[in-house]
Image 1 (cartoon, rainbow, N blue to C red):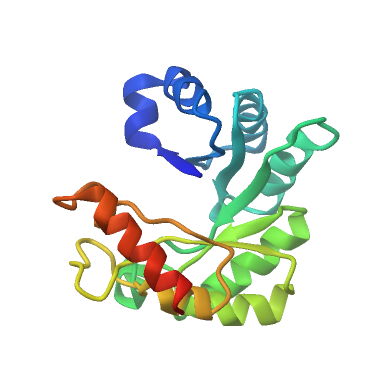
Image 2 (tube, rainbow, N blue to C red):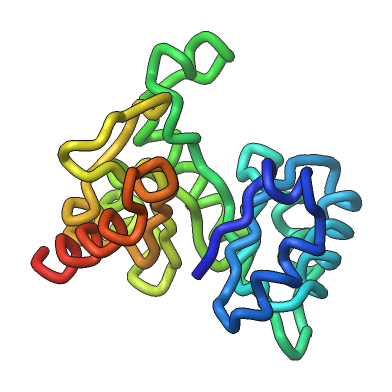
Length: 203
């Protein structure tokens, strides 16, 4: 599956989705919608109409009503993407959360937001590997988990605070891993991607 984030979508728009969908791969449209319920519902509905979109996400911090609107926007569609909620960005640690007025640990906040997303009728969450097991325990094995902040052991962390290796995330129960810069910034992206696949296979 290919992830299309805000940088590519801002530059190229739906054309990027159409061109990548033509390869036959699924698309994770990672635009993290966060607005009033009506606006988010419209955005999710528009995303669902793009070719190849299998996953789309919203920010759980938008609240219960916003997430419910996102779930309703795709309910009943013949080809429905799964809708995920972003819990706590992997660039944030406890100190960063405190600076924006959020108390508690990233784990406790991520679990609470995952529970709220499940109550809203969403299909799963985007969370770091550090919260995976707690979310699995709270929300059950069928609740989808997509894990960013993946860094092979030798890779730089960059702006990420809560990272894990591919093997660690798989062992913790991730359904999907989001792997960007360790591949896109590698001298040989194909070799870097294969090394990650080998690590996962041996985990």
